[in-house]
Image (cartoon, rainbow, N blue to C red):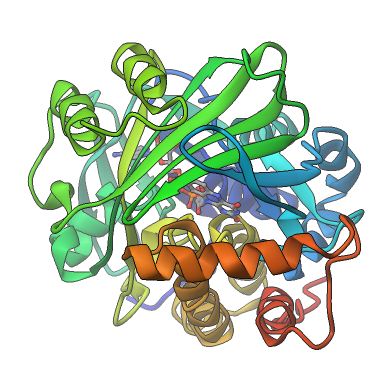
Length: 407
Ligand SMILES: Cc1cc2nc3c(=O)[nH]c(=O)nc-3n(C[C@H](O)[C@H](O)[C@H](O)COP(=O)(O)OP(=O)(O)OC[C@H]3O[C@@H](n4cnc5c(N)ncnc54)[C@H](O)[C@@H]3O)c2cc1C
């Protein structure tokens, strides 16, 4: 039986890529269901940046003003020593290559909430459920959900993140595609007892970093502990308590700054987010009627600072290709052709992120601190220097793709 145009889509995952896809697919008149394993949309969380080509995607959605209204507007990152004394206080854009006044820095949960609010009346959201099995036929995919529900769709999009369920069901175990960057990340919220206002404080040791980050969240700030670890703990399943134990053990004996307090807070945190710092590299992004989007396809890791941005861009392109190509397979092909080089360029940004956030040795840490001291001599807000190849390169990569028009 031949292929038919796409009319009915199932998306797995309601974070950033999933609702952004739902936005565009429903706009093109395609019936869209989004299945999310959590019982509700997850709010709060760490701040992410939307910049470069992704700003164009958000503008085209008409959601830029709402996102900008939730802008965190960090003014500085202060790198401190073990006594809390400032080594260097710099403009965040000096590291990210971002554009002040235009980019959006927003909590991950806020962007998800904005995307969900814009789509909840048009797409069918199915919380507290997950795909149990996918049965592909020449003209459809039959889906059985964990709840026992069943559904039939023309295509299924896996937008279910780094540890994608859809990817595992179709392409096999994550370890085949995971590029472990060598670190683990534990993030959680703590009371803002630092008087921190629109900025971050970071204390770095070789292979470790402890950070608190103001997020415009009333009396709360976002804290994270990052540490080098030899193998990805997610090669096997990790119990919740073991994530806390592992993080605490990696900071044992670190008495500098407020690390002992942060470790205590992490042990008790109700919103602990623990993950490997990993990327996903796939030889192909689709198989027959199943296609991947966002982190499930091309996770970049937080050290690139670009995961959400490229998820938004990819959603625009995948939905646009599905709506305008005569069949799903040519749409998937065009999507991968356009997006893959952009995603891979952004994944490569991880190297500079790593050298600034978590230098490996004492010598590298001292060299980094020296570089930060020099940067700090620039007046805040005027840090972008055309002669700084690293900053120029990051900016070019953020905007390396021009969005096609699908209208
Ligand atoms: C600390 C940190 C800082 C970051 N900073 C930045 C930044 O500055 N800029 C930036 O652009 N990016 C940043 N990122 C990356 C960014 O968070 C991700 O790239 C982005 O969230 C990817 O969106 P996604 O929708 O593809 O996947 P995710 O946000 O991972 O969402 C996947 C969704 O799928 C759901 N799900 C999982 N399994 C199932 C299942 N079996 N069935 C149904 N649903 C399922 C999950 O519950 C979740 O809702 C950062 C990441 C981290 C961890």
